[in-house]
Image (tube, rainbow, N blue to C red; front, side):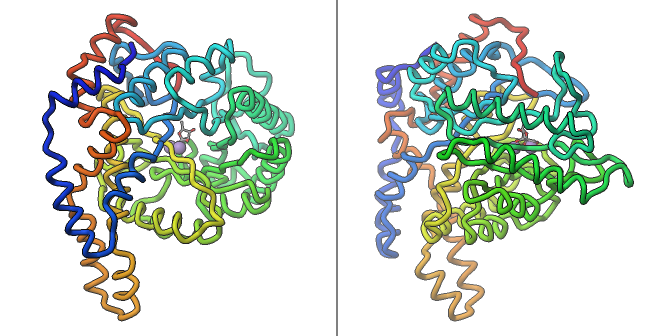
Length: 426
Ligand code: LRH
Ligand code: MN
Ligand code: MN
């Protein structure tokens, strides 16, 4: 199924949305503060977020999985689904693949399909947390950190293979997330595990093409429940520094212990030029991978506030690779991703509305109340009209979710692919 531009402009016309009136009001309000709403709309229109190949099917929990129907059974179909998201939003112009879940059989054919949807290949993800049926070595007790040299070498070789596949596709980065750790005290020598991880990552880094970046993702627990070797941003930062200039930390919003100040982590990493990638999702308890902005929208805004500040003030930090890392078991996966994309743009727009000059002045005056007022004035602005204007500007659906439902996308996918479907991935 493909959604074309004519369909979308017809749909937009019928919507008769009054967002332009709302924009006039915001333009006047923010012009007084020296903030250009037109610039913000352009930034929103330019913003692109990669869709992970594993979020297109209904995820499961360890207790069960409920198929949603019409889920993609192949990499080709996954790209087609992202094509639908991108046509509706013009914000999802990239895919992040996970190997071996997404090994392309015919690289050129895959590239052609991606091109036809205007999708580029963002970071490649390696997988050394599952043993594959034909595996020669096991990752049961670790991969890059393993005490067993053969497992380590096997995991390093896998990452090299992922880089090779990524090169063929035109990707420029590798994300490494390790499940490596211990479930019980005494199981692992922490220092040896860290030393092995550093050595393995350096080898992977050394094998990357010169124009590639390495993103090192951290996570405090799960699947190991006593210790994880790359448990936090500090460990990731240390390893990235050990590897070199093109190695960076990747922040996944779900990978923090409750109440962690993630915005401060973002600020610290950007100050040091080491924030490379970002995985969006939301959570109440752990790595819940819920829809972005569904639980803690103010926290998301505060994080975006630091991202915006960093993108403007830390030119030595590369432009971060954005990705949604959310998937779960009861919503239509494409609707879930549409909601996440919307939430990301809303938080970004609110952060762009922060009156940075006034904030600086209030901070210098130690006017704590005013500092909070300034942030909340931006956060409490209804910016949905700005997001709609950005969508209209880039030829997307002004209301992507309404268009998705009006075009009967899921029904069409179920008719084409069946009701009992399983997508490769988690
Ligand atoms: C680990 C993680 C990591 C994986 C993905 C499937 O929890 O966030 O990014 O690659 O989930
Ligand atoms: Mn992640
Ligand atoms: Mn995760």
